[in-house]
Structures are given as C-alpha cells and as structure tokens.
Length: 330
Image 1 (cartoon, rainbow, N blue to C red):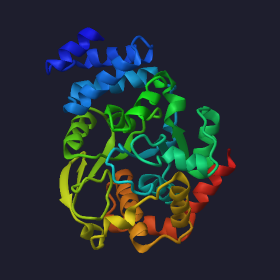
Image 2: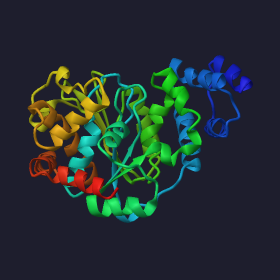
Image 3: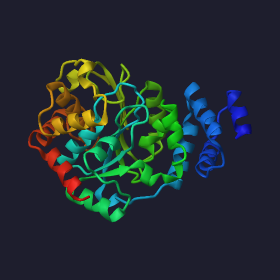
C-alpha cells in the first residue's frame, strides 16, 4: 500500500485493473486501518476517474454474494447519499410506490454513513429482517413486487471497511459505488447522485452497459429530484435540465424535505407518507421520483401517464400494501 499511496500522492491515477486489485487486497485485509483511511482520503481530495470507479465496482461485484432475479426484470431506485441534506427516505418510499404501480423492484440499500438514517436503518426499525437467501428474496418480489437487498449481507468481503467509513463520517468513493454494485445486477435503474461531476462519470460507466438508466441530480445539490429548483436528468438517449413544472408542480421549500433527527423520526415520516398522510410537498417529491422511475422502466410512456400510475399507487394504498406484504414474508 505504501507504494500505491506514494504514487497517488504524486497525483497519479490507478488503471482499472490496479483499482480492482487494490480493493480486493483491502477486502482480504492485507492493509491496516490507517492505510485504508489514507487510501479513502485520496479520493475525497480529488475527483475519481472512470477507470478507478469501474475497477472498484468490478472488485466488489467479483466478491459479492450473487442473486439471480432476472426472471422478474426488476428496477433499482438508489441514491449515492452523501449530499448532506438530511432528507427523508425519498428513494425508499418511491421504491414502494413503484412496486405498488406494478413494476418489480430490487431495492439495494445500506445503513446511513454520512446521514442519520439510510434505507436499511428505516427498514430494520420497521421490522424487516434482512436476508440474502435467494428463495426468500424471490418470494418477496413475487408476492410484494419488491425485495430489499441489504448491502452488507451481499458485500461481506468489505466488512472491515464499514467501521472505518463510520468513524470517518464523510462520503467516500463507497457512496459512489453503492448504486453500481446491486448484487442482482438489474437491467433498469434510476440513480440519484450528489454532483454534476459524478453524474458525468456515471453516464460514461452506464453507456458501457446494457442498462436502461436515468441519472438524477438536483442543481442545488440533492441526490434526487427535490423539486427545490432545476434538476438534471441523464438517460440512454441524452440529458436535460428540467424544473418542477415538468411534473406540473411549483418549487418547494427544502425545509419541508427534512428527515428528522433520529431513525425513529425518519421511520415515522416514512409510514405517514405511505399511509396517505404525508404533506403536499412530501407527496409531490416522492411522486416525481416515482414517476421518473416508472418512465425509466417504460420509456414509451409520457411523464403525465407515469405520474398518474404513481399517484394511484400512493392514493389507493398499493404502495402500503407492497410494504406490508414484504414485512409478512419475514
């Protein structure tokens, strides 16, 4: 690691193969905590390259516990996190709305590192028992139209890095990797990123895959459609800068997106929205994200048609039913 760090400190970059090899070595516990922390810090201080991120992705996927859900052709809705906005769990709620709209979802999630409550924190608090058993996950997606893939159960090779990330308490390249390493390798994905720079990197990576994708970044820093201003979406066929009027909505106040100061508060907001008791702003934000995910799955549909499907899922408690069904399969 000393040689690698010396090269990186000279502003050199890693090739795709070098990046893959060093992350596999980290997983195999060849380096100590200080060396790993120093390595992670390099990529906080400078922009990661496409080759480096692809190498890290390939390393994690080569070490992960695979899960075959191809018969369901699911979509994943996942954000990088790391935007430091402390919003409520928008992509997780949207995942259940999309499932309630009839689209299979393989939701990849984890505990919060730089936020108070990640998707896994909320799901666990509400009673979901995580599993990597393929039979049970297939039962979940068959009956609830959604399964939850708790990252640590599939990426146990990286378990020695988790406490280091937690101690650092800031976003690292592992935040960037989360949406890229869904063990089900879904062919359709909507992903939120925390910067335009990362949106461009993701675009380069996804263009080399067979995915139908939508990359989202709100220009004021949110890693989802926040409706607080303009946002950029990048798809297989190009990019657009859009505003809340794309969904027929007005701009909202970011204060109304806050996710609380504890997992308990985040879970309460989660259930309030699924039960149809969310505020107008909360509902609009999850519906906008859900509609864009539905359009990612069905690109031929107009956004108004996708919004209608999302509204029906939330209003008619189909999203809530998907959630309750998922819990029963524990």
